[in-house]
Length: 216
Image 1 (tube, rainbow, N blue to C red):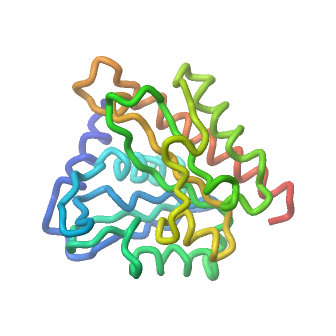
Image 2 (cartoon, one colour):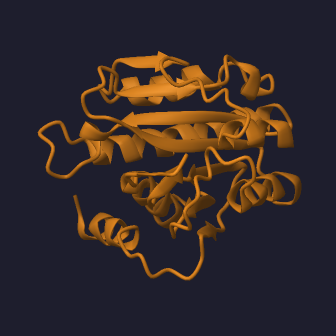
Image 3 (cartoon, one colour):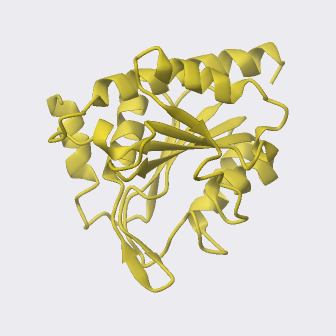
């Protein structure tokens, strides 16, 4: 893992950020999201940060110009669960006003999960007719030997207050991408962080082309 990646990891380990979330401008219609990049509180219980999702967003923004939104400070909230969320309000605004047509919401799987990636689509409801989108993401990961890959199992992202469901209601196609933590952690024997980053960059480019071909 290079110095820029480690700097990004330190960013999400810093608990002094003034803002609850940060929005990073970019180009193209695909927005990357990391609502669990810092600690979350769900039903009164603090849950671990998924900092590598924030790292991936920062690096995709810096290296490829992908627009991103990331949680940056824990305010005893969970942006992917709470009934009301300023973070999700901003995602909706970016869809209404910022030209976003697709949202990829990043999360981390426990390293003992058997799959490399789970693509959650709300059982297809969040795709807005972009039915080939999960296959495009699947192929970008599989080309790099990142497998197995599941669809809507075990996490379909179907609950009403997920980022994906909110994005879909606002009019964008959305997928929740649950990436196995063993592929991301720098001290893991299975670490493939660079390949995951490259797969996401390829997926963003392909989804942008797909949306362009549809005239969106």
